[in-house]
Length: 231
Image 1 (cartoon, rainbow, N blue to C red):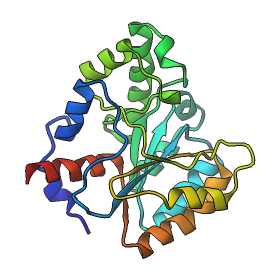
Image 2 (cartoon, rainbow, N blue to C red):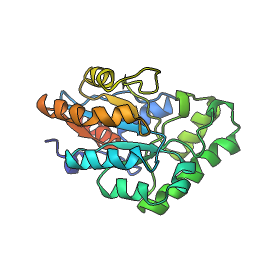
Image 3 (tube, rainbow, N blue to C red):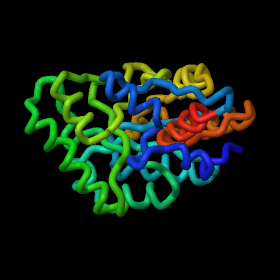
């Protein structure tokens, strides 16, 4: 198992991996990282919390001694208070997916900042700490979005593997097939409202274990890359 306590020493004070600060400064989102061959992947879930699927995902992860990163919406936290805290207390990472899920590239600087700050306050209120990473709705960025993210030292995270659980006619089998294409260092995009992803998750976690993979948070994945760069 990767030693994240040692890897943490390779992080900057912001908690951001060295290479990922470089990506941020170049206005690039992170899709995957170099883990030096270590079998690490980061499962991520967007759009929560909700009171139906989200708690079940947290339960399945805990039962399998696995962790994930939940990119949450501020409006959902207000609707379902306490669920983010439970996910965080179970060892998962809570990250920013904006307050209202807008097209960020269409917003001015004041509005972009508000979308991030409003959800950040809610996350800190539930977890006691600020989120360290961000994912833009629809994967959309603009010069304004990058300016705000750079000012906040907040890396933008996308993914190298997507299960595309939003597609019409999607099935748990198809989700598993797509998830199993992940390679070491990949960030995997899922949605925390998808009943099909929930149905697929136990077998996804089992298959990763059988293949010798460890499912970690995005920040842990960034720490692994930072440690690799220190060698």
